[in-house]
Image 1 (spheres, rainbow, N blue to C red):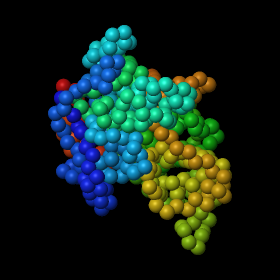
Image 2: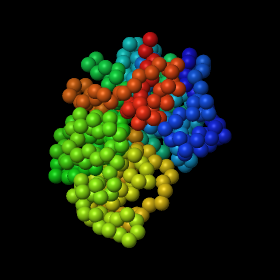
Image 3: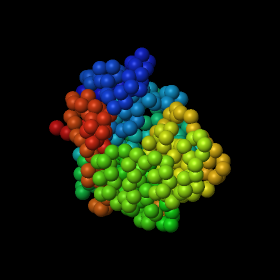
Image 4: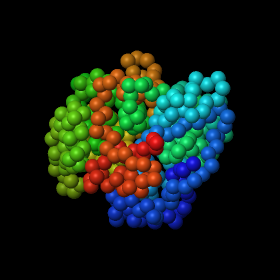
Length: 402
């Protein structure tokens, strides 16, 4: 079968890292250690379900890998070579006897590889349903890795065939088209931080970043019944238009500190050096960018005892002034992937909730999938995903349907 393979090459990784420092919106397809090739397909074990991918989304973590921008400290939680792709909607081809799955079932594949998948007794986090924090991503029957698409020997969605552990499958209802189902992974990634950090109706929320996760956060606040006021920060005009369609009340395009402060009701306090401080601000700041600037503005635009939530993946960041963390007693937290959360007083599986929200029929997902490409056109797909400004790309998807 054909599969898109990312191979280990320190030289090529560092070369793409260097090139992208100067041309950050360019995909260097001939330099990146990425090839479309024929490989033998073999499930990791007899209990795994064979799935034929239909659509597979390109995630920001895929782009960071191809830009050489991933954290060096996260290297142990991946193993190469690996078939890329972890945002997958597919069709069951073969299932083990006694399984609840039968050929023809349409499913999304939750890509996390915790204790249960690795043939291990549950660690303390898995036992509590928080398997996104599994302590055994480096142990068990599988190669080291936290998720499909970055783990040797377990496959990924950018291939003609893949395998998935039965516990990682969620059924897709008939009324949810493939183009909506492929959004489940990004939707779950936005849903988890809200389940864990849900604002009150009287609160003011900043969503910093209007890419796919920011767009989902905006829509989810309304879908989950929040009346909190939202200020959204975007970078491109097409993102603003999507945010307006998603119900944003205030949208700022690349605001300076004074403009952001004004939008959250804060007063700009001049400083001799450092660009000024803000007095007052929002209760919540959801950072969907994960950059030095977004973290800095988040620390400054929160009021006392406000909460900053890092949703966008970040590695090494530049110099920061973190005095507000101490001075205003802020709370900083991260949100990694998804597992379970609390909704309306009961514990729910986040991936299943994402599917249910899409199945309701009123979630405004239209326009969030911006581009579809065949697997053989993967270079064009990554070029489109890299350069959002030129192509107006939001969620770029590889189409593996016949």
